[in-house]
Image (cartoon, rainbow, N blue to C red; front, side, top):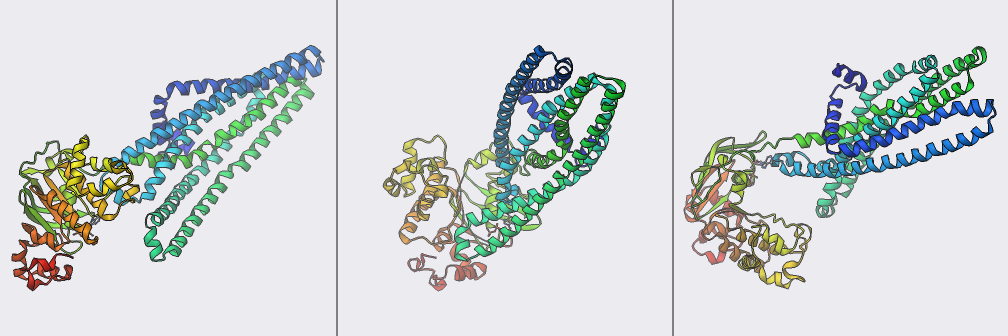
Length: 604
Ligand code: ADP
């Protein structure tokens, strides 16, 4: 029964009513008290509207027919009272609904952001940032708009129509029947439009996302955009996206405007029929004209809210798309493993083993039976051509993903059984794309270990060779670093990141060396800081510097997701395999013959 009503009323091929019911039930509970108050106000508004129609009867009969001068005053006073009360109630209703709406937008946005940050990495790679940005603002507003529409429709409009129909029936039941014959065709006509509106709304949203994604790319990559002069191409792409949205918006406008001529004509038919019958009744049958007037007034007043009710589904459709997308995020269960594994991992030595590990991103293979170990307290360097799978090794160690087969252990404990939070708290990551938050230097370092004391933070900065430049900043440790650390140089950012890692004091260190060269002074300071950081920890380093690989206890040479060669620098060089070729290529000014003379070959 409900399903049929659903289909008929909402042409509900894809469960819009279900989405709406969920939205209503979730929010009705949260704001029950305030909604009740708003409904009470709406009931008052409806009653006042009905009363203003009802009074017409006495006005015509007493004032115009009976010529009762005293009644003029009574009726005028009554009308004034009705409209004052109605105004006050309408004000209350608007304010209450507005506040509920704002609360809904606010709570939806935090819920969405929480849901987004809970997601696994695959989710972010799949959806452009533009997309998520739209969702955060657009979907929360859609939820509010959908609820507002339903609540005012059910509250104000439906109550008003019911009260006015009540007035009509009380005045003349037969005439009411005549007026209401237009209802079924009106509903049928409107229902036909809804499906199309919903489809257009969905395409419109997709195009909107494209606009934001182009804008996002242009803004975040503005240096590259300008340097390579691709502005024109982005502009064209934007023009296409904008034109597309305009087209969809026009289609939407046409579709939703289409209800107007239909409703106007049907309304006209109803009123004409009523005038024919009412005129006949008054002239030929001697009915009282006051009753007829009250009836016509009620009918005219009912017309607007009735039209809004009929259009409710059309207007709602656009918002329902947004609400549906909102639930898509809220309901998405992170594909990752973060909830699994409760074993609190304890790293004592820090012995890392990859045992026959396979991993794919979707269909793209990344690791194929990878097998190696990183021994406790030693530096293990990962080298290999780009795409060999080095970053994937790090991602699996942090459990951003789990292996498809094989296993990874630390001190004999399978990572799959370890709790993610516990595991990550024992890993320090220093990556080449150092990310700093727009906080003070102190807060950026303290991220390494929340709750660290001031002395510990300063000691970490000192060991990272960062205290010198920090003291020279305008506000020292209290200097804000700007978005992404934009107010610090590349070398300074890296030293803050190293300080962060030193403060963390984790037994396992993952180090992704910078590929870009820094000035030699920064370089030397960073190297010294890194050496201090690596001491006594199991370190895995994605190496780009000859100095690093030469000092590593072990070098793992990777290609196509597997290990080709492993061993210390000299042994691998002697083998003359891929490592030797990589050395010749990558460390350009390195003279392979001269391996015994490190002084000449310390840069890359
Ligand atoms: P490396 O760090 O050695 O350059 P990666 O571990 O980044 O190599 O990549 C290994 C393989 O996995 C490459 O073929 C790369 O294209 C692919 N890959 C890496 N990250 C992703 C990702 N997020 N989605 C799809 N494929 C990826």
